[in-house]
Length: 556
Image 1 (tube, rainbow, N blue to C red):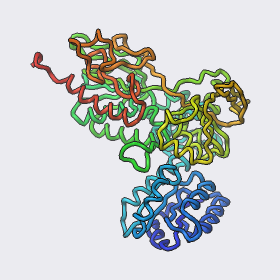
Image 2: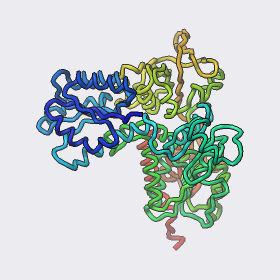
Image 3: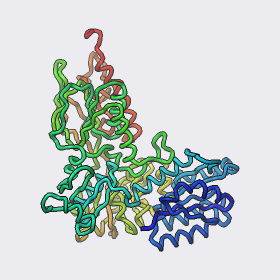
Image 4: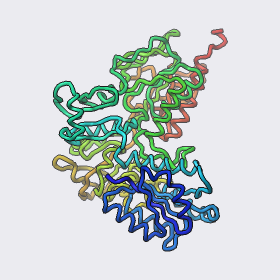
């Protein structure tokens, strides 16, 4: 397969860009163009030759088009390519006022100052981040940490691939009769009775029957949890709140264990691109944010156990430690932070539930989105997760329709996402509507939409339905002593029943009705349901844990 291309477009400073991008020439096909028209013909040529365009870099002033015209035309031609506008240092401040707002609308991914000399690593950091994002979401991986052997992209194979994407594990799917497939199966013990078969690094090939089996391949079997001592802190859940608690707890000297049922990152880990997280001006994917936080926590000493659902929490009595019980073993701790997050609410339409994994997906389903090229898809939901999923899907799908019950997105979605969606010609917002039916043969082929006020219905042919319907807590494993609201969210601080207050004083803001047990993030009643807020609560709760663990005057 041809190398992916980087297309440089500049009339006056092409020599500067060509010199700067020479470092990428070994692994990318770097093309140089002096006008928008030349670049357009270059991209057509590359596409006809079967080459992928990973990135195009356009100077802020062109001889035959405005930047906006050039970028828009190239985006329509190659929607998956990352887009960078660069300005020569003589024009950077002059052009910035008119060009920077374009990033908020999603017209391009970055506006950068053209390098003034060699080793401008600030510039190249931005370029590498964009190429890395393209490589993770569009290109087939060059390095396979896991090889998946399966004759079909069935429901389980898709679920396995989605899990591997969420944990940042590069992989490819190979047919059983392919060269790689035959090599893997030759090392398999016996004959597989089903698919897929996984070939992970440093382990023999194994047939998996669930995503849980995949987790065990990487993190051990359920009986591998062995924590003999009483630890200072157990964090239940490794979404943004749990990861923040893990980092801050371990960095401040607490012996910390974090237990996660599924993939590190939780619901946020499925986000294709989070653009409003502090410190990441070009955005960061949920997977990368989660993996960086996990590595940071491990560096400070946090022990992670992944793939084991927590089945019970036994509060400690009379100074005894709390016990977090999982299917793989128990962990005793002096303090517990509940950060198990939420899951997407089910749609509740039986005809569509039958197609779960076969065109109907809960969450962003990063793997499935690649299979939506030139298809029409529907995204149901009005929150930021739905907006991020729609923008990502628009890189592949011919059209994306966001369906919401409210008249529009203003009340539930961040302004920057609404602006980006309004600008994107592939995305349509259908307000005051809901999905009521759907069907097909082996795969989803159509959905039926209903106008909420009039009841009028119409059918659309679609290949994908992505459901991001808001949150549902799952706290069945919590004891009755931990108070929850009518919807099942954990009550903390002033929201706990007054009979649980001490001398008329409510517990601290993130403390539950059980001393030594805290809650942070989306699972907490009244939380904002934002990644940054959850991270902030995860960091804040550690100070409360410290206060709880420190001996009071009566204990000294």
